Length: 251
Image 1 (cartoon, rainbow, N blue to C red):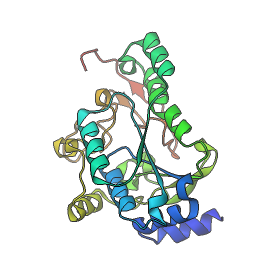
Image 2: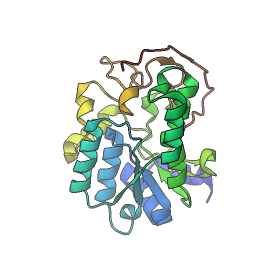
Image 3: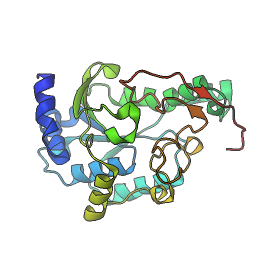
């Protein structure tokens, strides 16, 4: 498969066609990593309504870090009951979490960027690596509009972080308005936190609401400056080391 030719072809296709292509090409070796944000609910809806021989063949997983909002669990339950699509829940390794908390405490992430990245690594990165073992492609809800670090996201690209497998972003060129239009037209359930000022939703201790018009990811790890990523999607842009402001343990 030639990257440039395939990428150019997918760039002109709809998001549904991208998913059908992935399902037809890779089958269950294509993994959709669903975080239950609005973008991922759109993709889950598309997969659930695709033909059995195409998008429906895609394997769906989600990472349960153990620190998610109750609203996210409520949406996971609703999706389980609404969509006839198996959703594999992937948890962090118990021993890794126990060692992390023993070393730094349950809220270690507030005290340094290194601690925060260590927590993200244990609760997100390592479980995803495990879930993608044997996969040939993974599908994500990244959009270029989400942040400066994601402004160059392609529909199809090799992912060196996961052994060079294909990374597919069917909504790369969608705006937030496009996402919300699909949600309304298809009556897609989304996280109630979106209506409370949370455009980007992660773990409960590390996410807060943002004012209208603010950077969508500014509510993630708000005590840090610099790149707002957990390690699942390393930026292709020059990285800033950023800084962390020590915050109290009352969060």
